[in-house]
Length: 191
Image 1 (cartoon, rainbow, N blue to C red):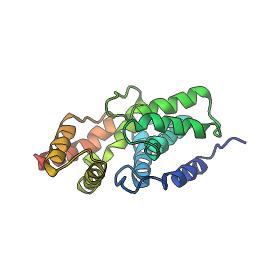
Image 2: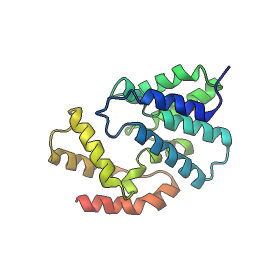
Image 3: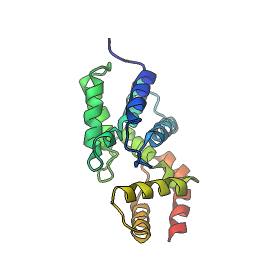
Image 4: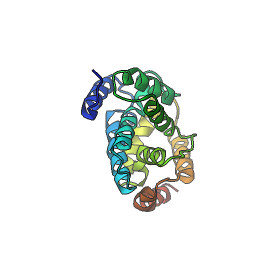
């Protein structure tokens, strides 16, 4: 019998994510749940009322970084693969599975989000940039990147952070309004 309960899907994936490499100080269960929470909030603020769209958005939020179970770079494709493996047990049409995959791929930093749902998930994925816990979360990301050898020193990290914040934009009206001003302050504090 196909799984339709979001809570069942969520619990099954959280159990899988407990197998993540402990060096993943940022891309972990806490991040996944944070993205889920903010995707739901942004969707409400963006007036997404279609229950099926919300359901699919929440599934994409859960799976968006599941690929870290297998690989670091290129994890988005692996996230899609893991989702599709699990989706055989979900009550989703092929077009709904495609939509979830498109949402997951919209979280890739080099990809441009086009639909409202893609913009919501993209903003939720980096919501912390415009929050008070920015320093704490960005330090976890720095530790993770150091552990995996993507940065070697503090200077490299600071340059990378500044460049990312300078180029970053929120896509939804609500994130621009709610997170944009503090994101700018967080950026200026690093300059």
